[in-house]
Each structure stands twice: as C-alpha cells, then as structure tokens.
Amino acid sequence: MKKYFFLLFVVSSQIITSQVYESIVDQTKQWDTLETVYDVAPAPGDPEVSYYTRSNSIGGSIMVNGVSYNEIIGNHNVGANYIRENANNQVYLSPGVNGDSESLIYDFTLLLGDTIDLPEYFSNQYLTWTVTDVTTVFMANSNRKQITLEWNGNIEIWYEGIGSSKGFLYSGYMPIDFDENLSCYFQNNNLLHSTGTCNTASIEERNSSFAEKFNLFPNPANKQLNISSSLTDYSIEIYSILGASVLKTKSTTVLNQLDISNLEQGFYLIILKTETNTATFKLVKN
Image 1 (cartoon, rainbow, N blue to C red):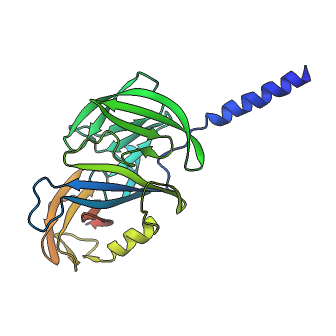
Image 2: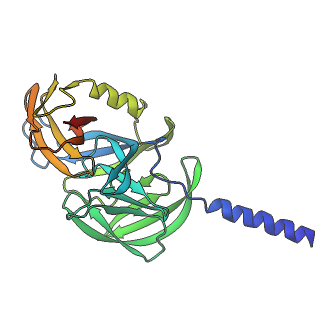
Image 3: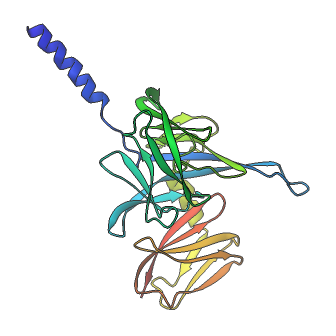
C-alpha cells in the first residue's frame, strides 16, 4: 500500500509541475524579429529584398484607461505601445485594432478546433484563426506548450513563454510585401533560441545609445517642446499617461519645435522612432 501511495504522489507531482505556465510578459526577456521587405518594383540600384532586425523587451508598468499594462520597449511596426497578461494566460496589446482599447494576441488555454479573432494591425481588422494542433515541445531549455493555428492556408505557431513564430508582437500579422519571423529569444541576456544572426547586446545597451542622440528641452514644458538631434528622419509620437495619442508628426530637421500649448497639464510619453530603433522619454506638461 505504501508503494502505491508513493507512486501516486510522484505521478501527481509531475503532472502539477508540467502545468506551471510560463509568462510572456516578463522584464527579463528579449526578442529579435527579422523583417524581410520585398520591393516588387525597386528603383535602379535598390535591392529587391531588404532586411531589418526589430528588438523588443518589456518595460515598466503603466496605467492605461484604468488597466495595468507594461510598456513595450524597442522598435516595431505594430500600432500598440503597451502589453498585459492576465491570470488566464491571455496576452493583450493596447491600443487595439478597429478602434478597440486593446486586442487579444495570445490565449494559451485554446484547444484543438478552437477559433480566435487575432488583430491584423497592418489592415486594422480582425482575422479568425483556427487551432489545428496542440502539443508540447522542448525549446529554449524548457518543455513548452506549442499551439499551431491556421488562417486561409497561412500557418502560425505559438510557443508558451516566448510568443509567435512570426515574432513577439506579431501574432496574427499578415502584412503585404514583407514578412516577420522570430529570429532570437533571450532571457537575462542569455541567448536561448536562434534561427539566425542575433544582436547580443542587451536591450538597454541598444536603446540607451539611440536615446543619447536626442535632447528634449525644456522639460517640464509649457507652450513649446524642442527636440534636437543629429538625426533628421524619424517619427515623433506623444501619448497621454492613459495611452491616448495626442500628437504624431515626422521629423525632417535637426531641431523640431512642437507646439504643446493645447495639452493638459500632466505626464506624457514621447516615442521617437526610426526604421531600426525606438527611444522613449517622459514629458511633464505644466
């Protein structure tokens, strides 16, 4: 009787251990996504195919419309700035598509045959994907749930704790003339998974050097905010602390003078982006 009891305890312990879910929204993690851009009619001398690496990690917490999110750090072309994960193993991006405050991009409770409406940020709509397989694989030093989905003949694979085969932020992404694919996954700056060349510098190192190219003054500011840089070609986005977009413009000069007199007093996030880098600053409007 004692032997059977011991065996039951061991088996039960293994089952419980295997069911421990690994979160995606984790500030110790970093992702590289390889973007391949196809130019069907390139100008003379331009390549038909170009490659960009988009690097991302999870930043600090922030309240958006009364909900707790984390900032998304790094460069990407998804129209969202915040991410959250709930106790039901579901991950959301904010803002969402089609005017929604947030959109669901992962649900690791899905079963074979289930469907899910995933946001397609490129076309600002939802596409309905179907789960075609649920299994467990050994990847990045751990056994992980793997969910395979299909939409209109297109295949996407999710890995528990990592995200999509398309890249960390690109679940459901179906752009035209370019592809996104997960190339590298790090935790605590240790490379755990790779399908190509990886940027081994930490996210902090990559983005801090880019942020140093900018000088924002005065801060706090009242009527005008100045952004000076040796760079001229980058986008400027300002968001309220609740995640609402209040200003979007494009830099074409080394000194940009922004009229912020119509903004209410409070805290704002300023996001400066090029094709390969992103820098985030905090602004106090008085």
